[in-house]
Amino acid sequence: MAAGPSALEWQLFVVGTGLIRVHVVDHLLTEPRFGWSLAPVTVLFEAATALAVVTVVVAVVYGRLARWLRQAIALSVGSTWLLASLVHHVALMLIRGPEPTDYTGVSATMGGLVIVVAGLAARARPAAASMRCRRPARHLPRAERRESWVDSRRRWP
Image 1 (cartoon, rainbow, N blue to C red):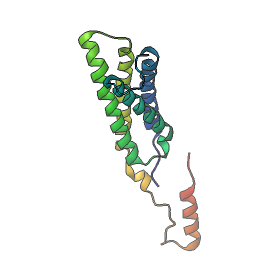
Image 2 (cartoon, rainbow, N blue to C red):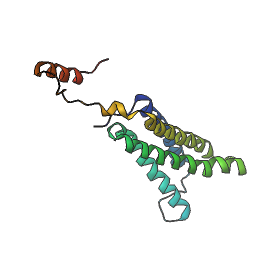
Image 3 (cartoon, rainbow, N blue to C red):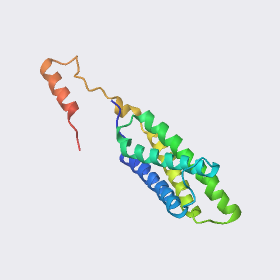
Image 4 (tube, rainbow, N blue to C red):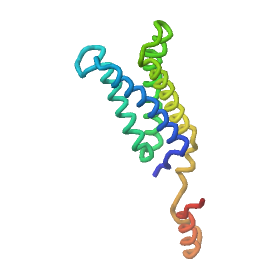
């Protein structure tokens, strides 16, 4: 069984998700022209909304995911948000000036960066902590073996 995420890793993912959610809600409130259709502009918006929903769902179940899956999701989702909002909001804001949703687009860029950092934190965490053997030691006499196994099950503060 893999160890769960560290508190810092989970907090980073949740903060990044919150920054992204602020941007998506801003788009939903300030851009009523984005309806659900197959026009090229709205398909991109629908994809971003779907990715936001996936990001929120992952944030809810993040602690139950395996370490390798947390890394993969955090790095892929985070880099997608980072690059997409960097191109569609930050770069365009610098070129043509800010539009109403570009300010929260900067928050989505920061959210993507924070999620990438959460993925790197999951990668940097040593795997040895999750690989500890929980079985009783076979080389000890039966009474000591039981104590050893019970001690390994206790959680120390």
